[in-house]
Image 1: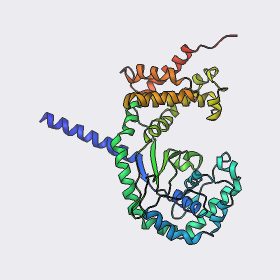
Image 2: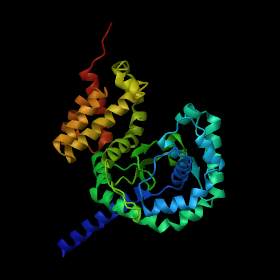
Image 3: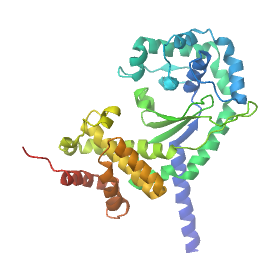
Image 4: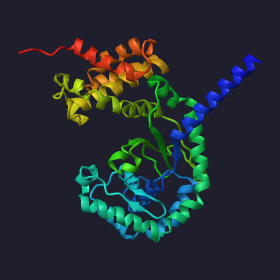
Length: 355
């Protein structure tokens, strides 16, 4: 009887943990991204999608709107980047779209000018209404759901979110949104949504498309599970340690003499201050430690080499320190309790020089 009760409780805890992870993971076609993708395709400012039954239906439905002002607007941009479709995250409240105006430091303003970008977003909303985009989107909702559920099952099965939670040993409000993009034939990438719309500030967003070779125009697209582990470990860690960086800001500032600001990698990655530099070094060290624990040795070594080549010079010593004194030790309740040890280690390993 005791054994059965124990097994039942373990099963219940497992189911509760799985349910919590599912709440933190969303795999969907984002209507805003799909909207901007269609517009750029019509303007011939986007790679042709892989052949699929869906792509054929989309082009048949929207093809007659090539002269729409939104299409002409993006067509007037001298050089258009594929990831410009991330502007779809500036929209909320579908189908009654509300537009959030991003802050002045948005990268796209530098490329096209703020007024041009904002006008384009407004014209995209007009395209949404004029073409009855929502009708098309809703007609395909069941297929979107199926594609998302298939990929979500693969991600859940890998247990990546559980791995990250198991490392930190405390909960955080980090959530993941995999944006499946059936008309995207060019690549996967993370989207920094907090710069586009604060409504999505606590979401880690990853955009991925349909990349299969010899695609069949009679079949629907499908989405593969690749490179998501680095996104979960790296971007998720930023959110987990954000409060710790604020809590220990004075101790961190006292170590600012460690900032290797003149290294090429710091400039290339736009690392402009020590707090940002330390944040990245710790997150990348944690990611490497998780690779050491859950991936093969070659993957771990490649991860470490990549960080060193990018001039995140403290990863080389922080990762072994974290692995030995936290991952392989039961001394600390959670990473929050261990965090000050990282700062003490850096201070001891690199004492300030007295002039």
